[in-house]
Length: 155
Image (cartoon, rainbow, N blue to C red; front, side, top):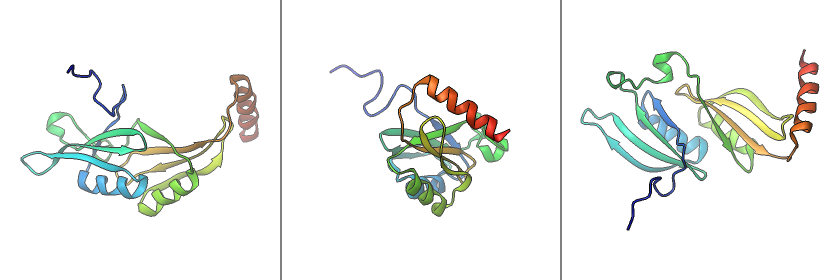
């Protein structure tokens, strides 16, 4: 039997998060995003060297920060330039569940010009998560018109 180039259940791109306190992060993602832990491997020093969770149909990998190996968390870096985006059937309840689990609301859930109902959170480990429910299929022209209207209203 031939080995698959992309392991079963994975997609071509898989996010890999570096966090301060991976066991706490794994617990948070389970409570906040209904993540299922698929596996965990500890380093000899007790840190989480690698773990995998599944959120919806997607796998996210993560580890404790290990600066000696170039793996630093947003806490150490004082921010992150990368965020994650989750589509879900009920953004309002997903957003509320994440906030109840300890996430910080950065932008409340609202209907957006591109056709999603969307909100922005920051998890306790410094990673930003956008959560949305797709509500309308729009053409690029419709989105452009709505964007111009939304941006002129905010100016």
